[in-house]
Image 1 (spheres, rainbow, N blue to C red):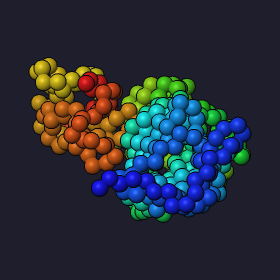
Image 2: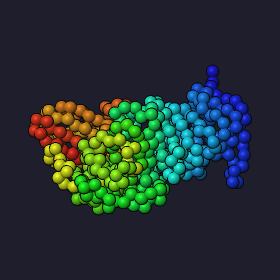
Image 3: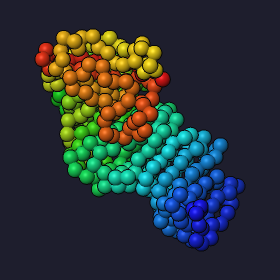
Image 4: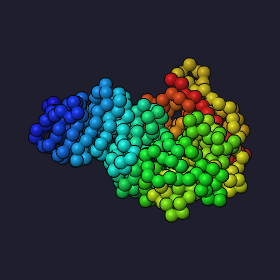
Length: 388
């Protein structure tokens, strides 16, 4: 039998500032396999939380969600060219599909966020034009990659916590921490702990979590890391201490890439002890490398079955069969790992994380690789381009 969307009470069309809106003052329920498409604004003033179907937001212009009662959707689909703008928080229990447009929250209203609930909330389709432009949050999650950024770029933050976060929240700011536009207070980039050389004046993240965690961040050409350092291996994570009122070195246990693009994984810390975090540079010799890292060639992989570059093949590995190869996307999300690697990577992921449709293969683009040759005690890194 065909399942449909049943509106249990009254959904009224009202006029707000010369624009129509759907006004919910009753109780809406989207039943299993049901679909409800919003082609206008939603004003939610009553419960809208017992849903098992799809809520879609479709418009060639911006749509807004406002009101006083936070809706809880099951599946959400976004196809609004100028974004879905939240004046009220939104919870989602299952899948969010980004097709066109951002979910936009006001950065100066930290109580408005898009919340991925429990262990089932996930997303697909994120990119520079499809993300959360503002605050994203999680509830009852231990590990998560926040699909956040600004109006121009996806700048995700990967959170790996030692235990479950009852609640965590994150947003990205392309603003000068010395004089931020969206936050109260200033964070003087000259006020540094003694083992920090300098920190970014271009961007920062605000992360709330009370659980000891490691954080993974990436940088791109807009980050202008060459203005901070000539050596990418000195890049660390830095945080503005709420207690010390200064920038502290949060260090790094992995740095991959070059000054134009790369990513960093921090050592464990409690994010909520810091107002904001950003990329910085450690004073040598406070962060020496464990071993020398050498750059290999960049590689081209096109797994189309023509016998040319179908796999990721590194000739140097013939001299070190006892090795570990790891591959990451441009945001630092690990997508592949293989011990005793020969040429197993064919453009698909073997990592159990947020990679969706693993059998369909990874999307085309630039990836980072790291190689540790255990029997030679050598480490290498470089880039590969995956073609489709």
